[in-house]
Amino acid sequence: MIETGAKAPQFTLPDQDGNDVSLSDYAGKTVVLYFYPKADTPGCTTQACGVRDHLPNYTEAGAVVIGISPDPHTRVKRFADKFGLDFTLLGDADHAVCEAYGTWAEKSMYGKKYWGALRATFIIDGDGTVVHVIPRVSPRTHDDEVLKALEQLAAA
Image (cartoon, rainbow, N blue to C red; front, side, top):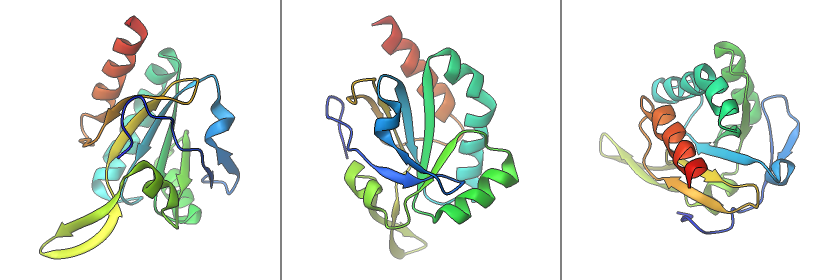
């Protein structure tokens, strides 16, 4: 997994509307980049709706939020529309960006092994450097953790 102090891997992926979005589009801005396993599943919905509900707090902290899942952008679009998610969600269908950030891993559920995206969040500064990593995120506490980290980074 990418660590604090590393340069954030650049990427271009389709957003929920099918438009290409690149990390470089946000040069000079703080980016909260969060990876989630699958659109429209219980934990991912809790996490995304939390971001939606706290969007004014992220804006006040000077951060842009981007969510990435290994779903095709069409599934991400349905997810965004269903829950009124008014921030950028990207589809990483070939999981290349998940791999670049180290969030693509072997997982296990009910004894069955499979590959999928880990739930992790990276805060990237305006120069493209990873300044904070939350390697294991709880959907329920995600916003509290990230907003506290943004506050601490601003005070430093």
